Image (cartoon, rainbow, N blue to C red; front, side):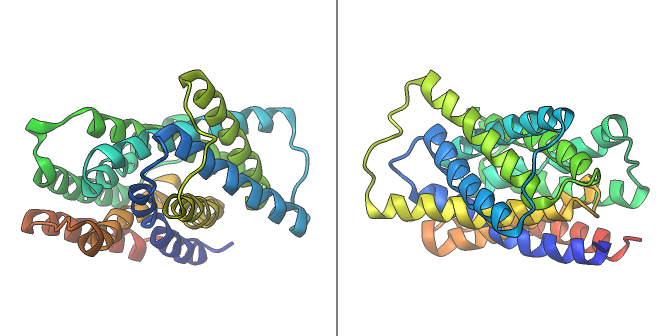
Length: 287
């Protein structure tokens, strides 16, 4: 896959990512952990069926299975932490804080997978991070930084680890459908174990709104959005790939205006502009 195609895929994935926070807000009856399980289980089922249909599903070597299990655990923890943040703070805060992952990857990628971060990528990360700070501070102020905001930052850390493992396996020849089938299945199992450990009342009846929200969350941002993201990791570096999802909170915040009346203020809009600038800069300076 060419680099330009990977970038185009990331733009599309960002649109689907943006629907996640909206579906989470409408899933009012399910706890964060229960929602995480349903999201992963349904996405895993979809990708396993797709893998069988496309004949891309096969048994992985033991080393890859271990890595997939680790990646799945990080993905499950990421979803749980992010969903909790969305339920407990504003969509703008939750989605922007979770997207501080490019900063973490700029530091971790050269160390863990020996993927050098270029000066242009560093500039883009810094500009985007400043935009994130503006939005987060304007959302509720750092003086009000609470558990939900910390949860969003933890979600950023977990998704950074998930991205590193995914990049390694995708560049090692594991296909997207095979990788996502295994990862979503492992993540669903981890979520199920956590549901049991927490004593959640997960398996009960839900009203139509919640069923639609759960299905939407599993299909659009997960089975489609995350799978497209993992597909892009075959040609796009982790730092760059994680800059593009920064458009997710911009789109999510736009969706939140008519749905939840969460209107961004001028400082937040300035932050949005900086993030878009960073994404455009890195997209037009890739070689």
